[in-house]
Length: 237
Image 1 (cartoon, helix red, strand yellow):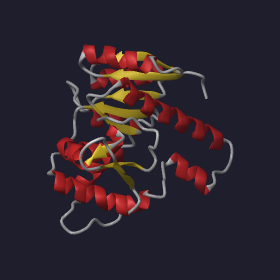
Image 2 (cartoon, rainbow, N blue to C red):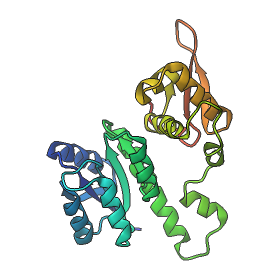
Image 3 (cartoon, helix red, strand yellow):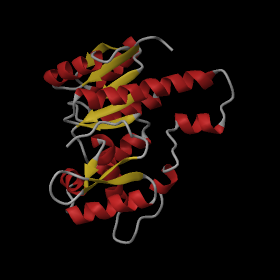
């Protein structure tokens, strides 16, 4: 694998492009080789510059980022795509996942949040390189597809009264924040605290999330949740 990962930043707000470019280039081993302010410009930049990763906004002036992702895949482009957007609609998240996006990072976020995704992407490139010249074992395939012991549990039927779509949003909120209480999750997803806790406790019981009591100096202990595969992930309070 090349020592440097080339990145294309796509957003129609030039100030956002500047910030994201600075975030990317603060991570050793990553550089921005081009920027684009529209979907067509993004497609052209992928062809012209051959980046390994695209930071792609959903809301663009000529087409959606989801459409850009679909066109890239239709053209056979194997470039990694990280959706970087304020769009929280579950249909957008599901479309990005089914279209082959590497991840989905919700604005606003900090440099640490993006750096964690970039490092994940670098690790995936390294795994692909390691198995490229040999027949992959099941554990290699699981690593490439992001398989974890909790992955099957995440797709298990939810208890009565809970929806799969809202469950996906709850899990996405935990992944993006790194560590959440039921109240914080409810605020992010738009649920009552009691409802958010039902989802969180279900995923904790099935092994998808870790739930733990956090003791402060005063008051009752607070129960917080985090992804099982993100022990070192960022924490947003």
